[in-house]
Length: 255
Image (cartoon, rainbow, N blue to C red; front, top):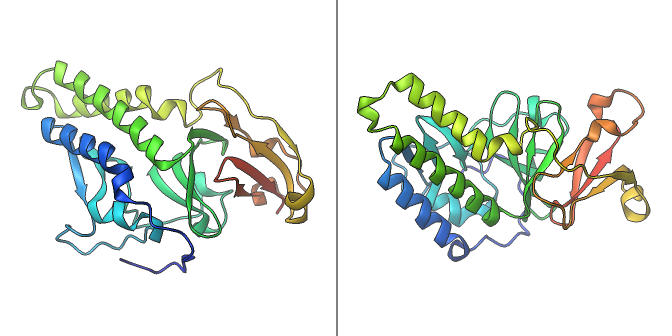
């Protein structure tokens, strides 16, 4: 495994047994719909050298599964090779505090990681840098992803065999279906979602430099937090975020 980032080593490895049902489900979907979907090999089975640097807590998962491709596009990527701190990641700070699961040039879905490297909640990040709660943990997110993939593949199958369809149109439809079943609700493109209140930080959070907190514990999936609503000294784009309570409390810090 590539270890170019100085990952913390205090996190327990996420046991593969807890993920087995959803991994088997994804494998079955890909096998059944191999004309439209493909499984990206994990590190233990890949025949090619992979430059990805996943957090140690995901070791068992990424040994088995590298991700899922839909019509050639990565809709789940567990082996991200090129990390960046721009675009949707502008406010996220230290690359060791999150790990991308899906990304476009303007949006992303990320897994939060605490100071020990323990995985927490999953958030979508929109073009406006707002966050939306995708799932309280990785296992739940993978289940929601599998639901969306299953619905998408079923709809594609109803169009008929891939070899009798137009490649470009089928690919566009696949993207639209995944957006409709999952990504649109997480990436700031759906109106009317619940909003979490940002309140002034107090106590330990304030001592750590946080200006405001949004508490998503118990919040509905899709609940939105807009860090740009917080008045910060200096350049708002120098605002950065940190996580508390397994990624369910978002702290907004000034530049």
